[in-house]
Image 1 (spheres, helix red, strand yellow):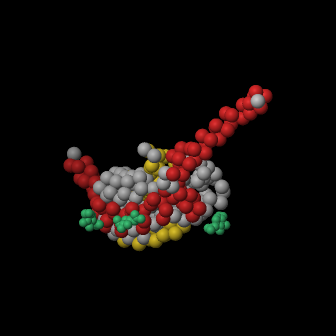
Image 2: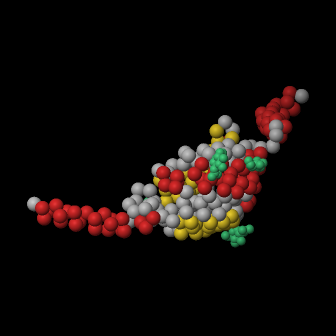
Image 3: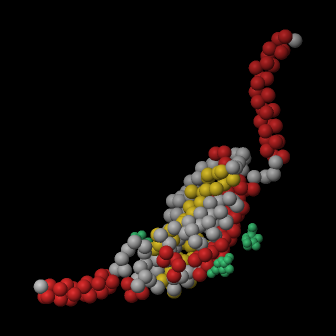
Length: 244
Ligand SMILES: *[C@@H]1O[C@H](CO)[C@@H](O)[C@H](O)[C@H]1NC(C)=O
Ligand SMILES: *[C@@H]1O[C@H](CO)[C@@H](O)[C@H](O)[C@H]1NC(C)=O
Ligand SMILES: *[C@@H]1O[C@H](CO)[C@@H](O)[C@H](O)[C@H]1NC(C)=O
Ligand SMILES: *[C@@H]1O[C@H](CO)[C@@H](O)[C@H](O)[C@H]1NC(C)=O
């Protein structure tokens, strides 16, 4: 009896550890399924991670807020996804809008395809949206004007077409708007020239020296503007010089 209990004893901590693990598993299973974790798995499937860059997004690893790479949480909710430069060649799944508290979404420098997703308009906490240098096409959805917390909208280097919807003027906190190197055309809503940092170069949008609106913030109106100033001021200088 004493012999048997001493042989059994070394296993005791292991067994109780296993019991604890099972209880933990049950307690997690009894809460609602992790909506955000499942949304991220959907997202990853659609992204086509053919280089296998994301290996630790896994439904069996509790919740995304504990250990998943590229994910930042606050108060147990995903608030930021930093997925730049991963060679993704798929699409951006509508499941992304299940991440209701997302404030930053960065997919810069991948090869994502498809229309610019209308459903991103539902991510009302979004402050930073960077889809630069992908293969997104189609127009900028009118409903993106509802993204009232947006500060940075960076869509440089895609195949985005159509004109800029007036609704973007409603996003009053915008500090950066980079729509450069796209197929956009037409008039630029005049309020957008007041965004501190903007760039419309490499498009068919109406800006530049002949229109008296620079295509990028901080840049001069270019050659023509300079020539106009120079040509006006030079004769005046000569007149002043001749007077003396
Ligand atoms: C995923 O990416 C690979 C490599 O870029 C490509 O060959 C394949 O067609 C893609 N699959 C889908 C479903 O887009
Ligand atoms: C997205 O937003 C629209 C308009 O506010 C709303 O009608 C729709 O139900 C929302 N979709 C989801 C999945 O929350
Ligand atoms: C801007 O927002 C107001 C109030 O929500 C709305 O009535 C108006 O239609 C919006 N403007 C544009 C151009 O979307
Ligand atoms: C504007 O965008 C173009 C093309 O993306 C880039 O080459 C240029 O440096 C940008 N200009 C400014 C002032 O950021």
